[in-house]
Length: 169
Image (cartoon, rainbow, N blue to C red; front, side):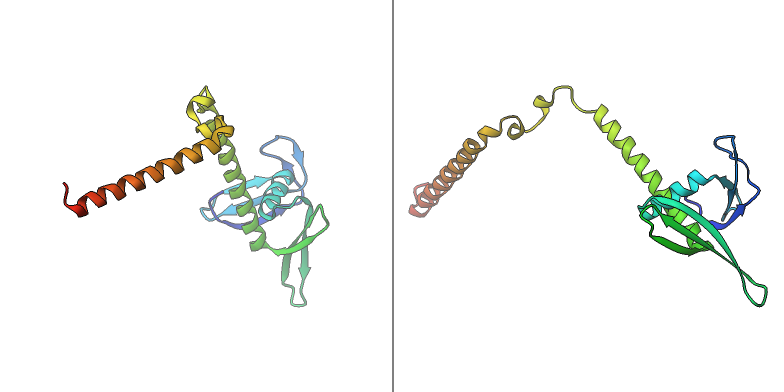
C-alpha cells in the first residue's frame, strides 16, 4: 500500500471478506489517491494498526459525534492489549494503516533476504571463515607474531635509514 489512503469508510452491514470469502461484519473500505478501492476485514485492519504502533491491538471502534450544528465528527479509538488507548481522526487512522502496511512489507522482505542468504552460504563454513573463528586458542600466538613482525620491520627500516645517512648505498 504505497499509495496514500484518502478515506476510510466502515461498512456496518458487512459482507464477504474478499480474502477469506467468509461473511464478516463489519468491513472497512479504503479509498486511495488513484481512486482505487480496497476492502479489508477486521484481522487485516488490526494487523496494520498493530504494526504501525509496534503494539498488539485488542480492539478498535468508530465513534460518531454529532455537533449542535448537525456536523458529524468521526473518531477512531484503538485499545491495545496492554490497555493503553489512542483516539485518532480518520486521516490519522489512514496514515497508521499505510505505515503498518509498509512495515509489514519491510519485515517480509527482510525475512526473504535472510532465507536467501542462508541458502547461499558456503557448504563448508571452516573453509570460508576467519582463522580466529576456527581456532580461537591461537589468538594470543597470532598477536605475538604480529608484534614481532612490526618490530622486525621497524628494525629493518632503522637499518636502511642508517645506511642511507652514512652514504653506503
